[in-house]
Image (cartoon, rainbow, N blue to C red; front, side, top):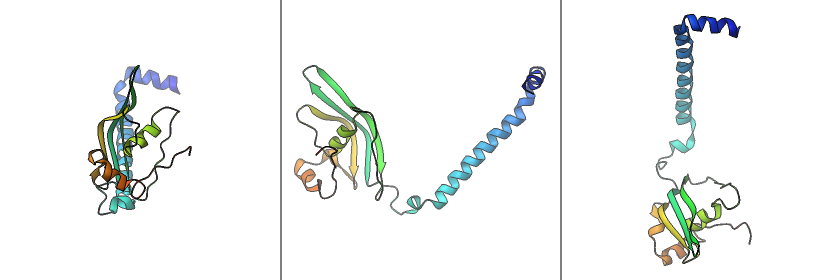
Length: 150
C-alpha cells in the first residue's frame, strides 16, 4: 500500500494537500474546542480574583559567591501557585529545589547566598523588597517551608 502511494505522490504531489489540510483543520478545531470547554468548565478560571495568584515566582535567579567563584544555583525559575493548590518541586539532587524555597523565604545563608534577580509576589507583595522584620512577621504565619530533613 505504501509503495503504491509513493508512486502517486511522485507523479502528482498535489494529492497530499487536501488530506494534510483536513488533518490540520481537525487538529486546530479539536484544540479550540478543548480550550473552550476548559474555560467554560474549570472553576479556577471562573473565580473573580483569578488574575492574581497567591504566590507568583518570576525569573528567580540565585547565586552563591565562594572562594572558588560563583555558583549559579537557580537560573530563571518561574511558577504560580493559586490558593488551595499544592506544588511539588521535583528534580535531581542539587538541581536547586531547596535553594528556590530558601530564596523565596529569604533564608539563604549570608553572605554567600544572594538573589540576583526575579520577583517573588505573595498576596500582592514582592517579598524581595520587604525588610527583615516584615519577613519575620510573615514566616510561619502566612508562608512556611517544611524541611525534608529536620
